[in-house]
Structure formats: C-alpha cells, structure tokens
Length: 225
Length: 54
Image (cartoon, rainbow over all chains, first blue to last red; front, top):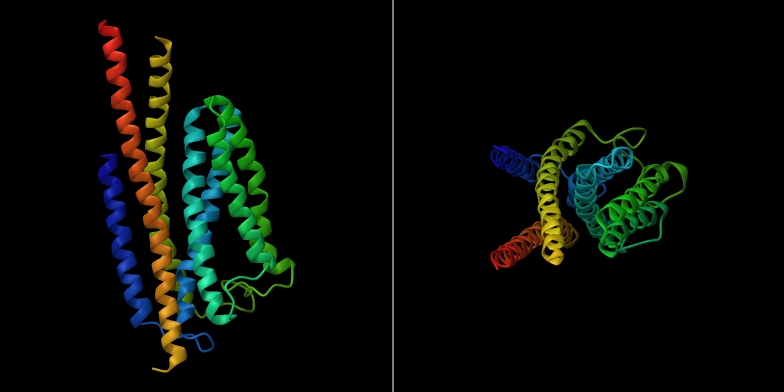
C-alpha cells in the first residue's frame, strides 16, 4: 500500500513536471532583461524552498528525538537532511549557471551565495559526523544537536538579501521586485512536483534507515557469538 | 536567433540538466546503498543461522 502511494505521488510529480516544462518553454514569454535563462528560476527557487523545508523538518525531528529518544525521529532527521542537501546542491549549481550568463562569473563571495554555501557545508558536516560516531544513541544525540545548531543559519541565508547589500537579486515573490503573476504561478506550480519528489525520497530514505537499524542489530548479534 | 539568445538557451539547458543530474545521482546512491544493505543483511542472517545450527 505504502509503495503504491509513493508510485502514485511519483506519477503525479512526473506529469506536473512534464506539463510545467512544456508551458515554461512554449507558453511563458522571455523575461525582458534576462531572456530565456530567467526560466532557471522556476527550478532554482523551488529547490531552495524544498531544501529549507527539509532542513526545518530535520530541526523538528531532531528536537523531537532529544525529547523522546525515539529512533524514528532520528531517521526522519537524517533522511530530511540528506534530501535537503540534494536540493540545496541543485539550488547552488543552477544559480551558478544563471550567474555565468547574467553576471559573467560563476561565483562571487556575496552574502547570499556565501551563507547558502556555509549552510550546505554545515549540513554536509552533519552527515560526516554521523559516519564518525558508531554507537547509535550517541550518534543520534550528537547529530540532533548539530542539526539544531545548523538551522540557525537558515534564516540568515533567507534574509541576507534584505539585511545586506548583495549582488544577488532582491526577493521576487514579494516587495518591489515582485514577479509578474504568470511567472509567480509557474514558480509555485513547479514547487509542488519538487515537493512531491522530496516527500518520496524522504520516505524511501526513512525505510532505508529502518533497514540500517536492522543491519546494526544483526551485526551486534553476529559479534555476540 | 542571435548568438546571445542561443547561448542563453544553451545555459538554460545546462541548468535544467544539472538539477536533474544531481537528483538522479542522489537516487542512484540510494539504490546502491539499498543493494549493499540487502547484501549485508543476507550475509549476516546466513552467518547467524549457521552459528545457531552448530
């Protein structure tokens, strides 16, 4: 039943993506100043939103683990973090490709870009920490603390373009630089399939974490002989 | 289509490919990890059963 739901969600995501890419390329006009490359925003921004949402889920799961000690919360935290990192990488790389055309450079040490990279590296450190600690309860406790600490950077990444003078464009969903309604609809419309993909990946990864716990138990049993 | 517009489209394609390539690589790592876990679980189960049988 669970697998059928995941396949169903995957099919919906694929259909929505196919429809969105078609409309994006054939129905939406080029942006006046940026041209066709502007369309990258329909993946760049939703990827960032999905990444931050995953990190938020990891934060809640980590707090819940520290409160209850239940390993399911730890599984959710690591699964959401891993998926968040994949979407974070998609956000960073797509942004670099956009920057190459619009700014003429791949990268600049701007507040937004730098803080996002630092955030990504912190969460990557979370995964490295998990590999370094063998005892499951200690690993879960330490990584929960690191996840909570890492999340403090997320609001900084989000608001960095408001708080500092940056080369990165100002917010496109609110304020003076607000996008035209058709572009906005496409941006939100493309976030939905990416969210569905994230949900599927987190569910699959959680299942894998359950199997890893089974493997740990078997290893202990084997060594006990 | 001018050179600039063509380059614009080319980089848009790179961007879309990069996003999907990253997600595809992640899915492949999930699949390979799943296979490794399966293999290890099977091996350990056999080992435990053998030892219990002795």
